[in-house]
Image (cartoon, rainbow, N blue to C red; front, side, top):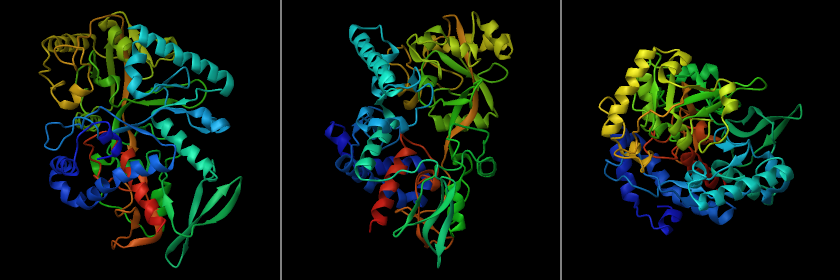
Length: 501
């Protein structure tokens, strides 16, 4: 019911959204009802507040809920994206905006709006595509000379840039590399934090409250092994080591029952090792991995999952199959049309990825099998069987292409099933995939306004937690797009309103 989608003509109602969540959560709905109600109430208010009080601008996304077969599901309009932002408005501050993950940008820092992705995937398909891509590349070249990076900010970077502009205009002083090291408690109330800045500790007092928003604990080996069913690989930033959880518990907060399989947002991860600097990781969410013309195989060269399933379902199924390392296998047509991880589509350079062992290639399937270390006969038989399913439009092994998510994130120009295409056009390519996560979803107990709760259910005075520092309001369930960033923003908004009194 956000104004952005309604003004764009999408139809929805509060009752339909609640019905969808109730049907998806089933027996878990009653335990989440209070938080669901708060979310549905505040989500439209949050979008209107940001658009009215900052440079933030949203656009309605033509993407569906993930389970359209459920009553209350919506075909489009419940997910909003960020309109591209001209980072030149930030001046020198544009250099402070962190680059997107490699594979979500080209040539280092050239960003593309998700809604324009098909244009950039096929730059030579039409004069319009070629003209649009050419203008984008020329602007990027100018930006590199003037600013040292691309200044057209898209997707998450656009949101960051827009909020950064408002922060600057409001006189907010942002401290980079200034970690919180200890909470300040006075008579059981959190009244501030000890901050380490420029090599010195500082006491920073907060009259109304402290909000924990440290990004969860995915980079903490200790906490990940304790709370996650599959803890080894993540794309979470290196600083996300559970500071918020640690401060919250030390201040008297509490944790809910562990979420087990739902304690993180799961995703296959490919890793580009670098001779200099840290390795780079790429999460394979609903991008090329759902497109026709590729499959995932285990160490025996056999399929084990519906590769085009919603990523939380894909992760659960991967864990159930006991697969920790797999390979994504596709052909020349798949790579050119959709890309493979950091290997971008549309004919962009890939030699450096092949040279560094990220993208593996061979002229034939048996040769590719040898290169990735699986049985050639098995891989050949697997692909032959899959190709038969693709030509018929029916995956008899794992039902790929049957579900609404599979269909929506496939390619509607591919017939008879948008999720299925044969793997037959050499050369052939493979990526090594590790079963990992994008972010943790298990955290501190909070109420509808983000207040951290004690074991008794009473709030810890002066302390709030939002985002991945709080327990996910759907307890790790994931029925639609945006259900990590969405709750972060909605309950962050509610916490801000509550702190402001």
